[in-house]
Length: 377
Image (tube, rainbow, N blue to C red; front, side, top):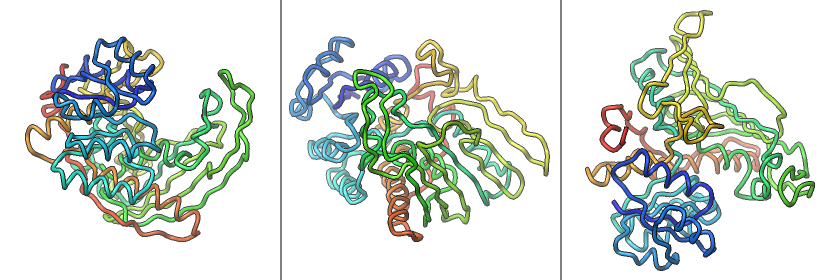
């Protein structure tokens, strides 16, 4: 399938590199950006076509468009793609407003085109191995769990971190999609959330780049603690923060009535798991290093030892279009994850438990046998 990109920032490089190296069922042929220089540089770097956004949307060769714009623009750009009767795959989140996300689903259905949404890290060997263990009843029914994402703040490394501290940013909307998509993939939909929040620092100091030492204002909560109630009866506590200097909490830990499981970073595709199946027993490591979508990937990014297969969700969606089935990184999942995040923030403002407005189905397990159909491995 011929694919175009709208939004030619840093992440576009990863999509194109990975498309050439790992995936055999789509080809990125065109790019566009409202900043002409950005699309021209990307087009020259990878020898692909450069068009205006309007020109790309009119290009009959392009059947699917990847939306790599900033979150604030995800709705308007995805809407224009769907209105052009092209399939759309958006970086996360599907929108920053639930009502607009719902409109995108309705438009995709009306025009009979697919709408997909990142993250696709849950399709990697780390989470898929956990999914298989849970489906095989390795630790019984999941009753409880805990997730944690805490950093000092992105201003210590990002030269323009302003958007992280404005509406549409913050730890929930920034990193929540990885964690909540993983949880829904493993446990099913959420039915309610109850949250509290705190803003530790009202100002942040930029630590790098041309704006180093410049002070920016913080306009949103930067630490949030939530309790999530799932349709299957599980209760999970969630901690997200831009205010923690250092921590040693696990990314995701789930507790069944027959054991416990510890998952790797949901922001990555690979990584080892740990499982314990006896009371006060020892953790047993489950490695995924030799699996498809779990292999170490030092040659692409020496600073990230875990495999980087960003784009697998897009490849799986192309395969789903070909075979007329629901794609795993589907719009219903993306909308439900947005609903979780939006409801958490609403719970903070209203100081009460919030019931979710949406639901979705758990994506099916992605076996190595299946993903080899669209991988070059």
